Amino acid sequence: MIDFEYTAPTQLDDAISQLSEAGDRARILAGGTDIIVQLREGLQSADLVVDVKKIPELTQFEFTAGQDLQLGASVPCWQVYENSEISAAYTALTDAVHIIGGWQIQSRASVGGNLCNASPAADSIPALIALDAVAHIAGPAGRRTVPASEFCTAPGRNVLEKGELLVSLTLPAPGPHSGSAYQRFIPRNEMDIAVVGAGSYVRLDSDGQKIEQARIALSAVAATPVFAEEASNWLAGQPISEDVFAEAGELAKKVASPIDDMRGPAEYRTHLVGVLTRRTLATACERART
Amino acid sequence: MKTHVSTTINGEAVEFLCQPRQSLLEILRDELSLTGCKEGCNNGNCGACTVILNGLPVDSCLVLAVEVEGANIETVEGVAQQRQLHPVQQCFLEGAALQCGICTPGFIMTSKALLEKHPAPDEEEIRFSLAGNLCRCTGYDKIVHAVQAAAESAPAPK
Ligand code: FES
Ligand code: FES
Image (cartoon, rainbow over all chains, first blue to last red; front, side, top):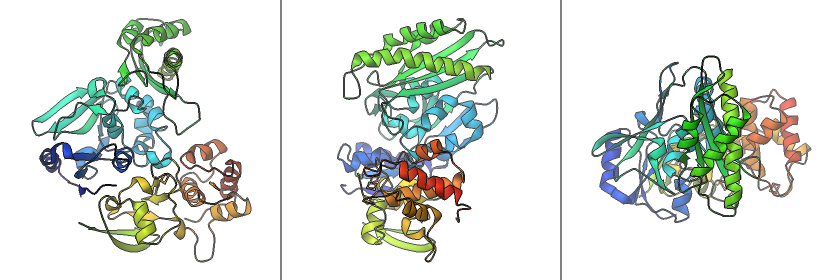
């Protein structure tokens, strides 16, 4: 690996000034499971690596029932699934962080880092989009927020400008009668990259008979993970049935513009969008009812 | 410029100097002569470099050595107590859960972490927890059986 300087600021402002000063020669280190490999393999280069794991705002998270969750950007995957309240409230995210790499990766990799890495096939991003997460960004010009659905701009690229970093994610409190799920298709059981991933969130009416609101998001079918807006909107007011899930799957296919690659041909990926949309909706509804 | 790092490794205070670019794996093997952890892929896929960092299994090739200031690290060298093998080690040995052995230290570390968390895991939990450790020799079944045997022979000493 090429030499670089390392700093681990304990104040957000220090991180911002160090990042601003080094400009595009700086890289942010949270769990390191992507950036260390990218630096080692020459896919990224840096003169300065800024470790953000000592900044309180980035490591904080606290669950209060009925309130939005603020999840620090460097909180590792295991802290999400080991927290019984968070994992029960945000099941789509729990599903996702449990299958990002193996246990060793989950010990380090953060949800915020998975978002920033902006892989089209990232597991946590469809879950974040389905759960309507909002990213809090801080930088030299102050603070701003960006919906998770707009955070990634191209493969490996995100909205962060020079000197900016992701501080935390807000996940809205799941309403009553709501449920969510994330699933991906891979040819093995674990430790693989999604051929297609789908996250669904639903909120049902008080009888648990009808869908009041839904959000579906997909990964590995476009340059960035995508929100399936039309399918999501169409679901509002629909009864819970296999036919409805299947129709939503058909509508979700409209936002898929997959490529052919070694993980699967485009046609197969499009087919999987239908299957996974159906299955995640069914699971989300089932979870919403219990 | 080299950075000074103080850690605890296998219960002993250890200090070393490292370059920011050096991984924990490099320092363990090349500076501290703890060659039990292996470099398989050097990119987080194989788990041969697994060590336990603050109670959790991690790929030491994906940790910068500068990041472990103040941390508590366990490597395979510290698993046996005096001449007493850990139940996981004993069961790997008795169950022939290794062939070439390059993956073994990593499997031992992940298995030890698993049993400390779930003293009685079922087969699925074992396979799921060990998914980040690859073995190209054994076909895994003997490894899974060894971990099951270790769980049964518990209480596993910490
Ligand atoms: S050498 Fe670290 S995971 Fe393979
Ligand atoms: S025993 Fe050879 S790789 Fe596992």
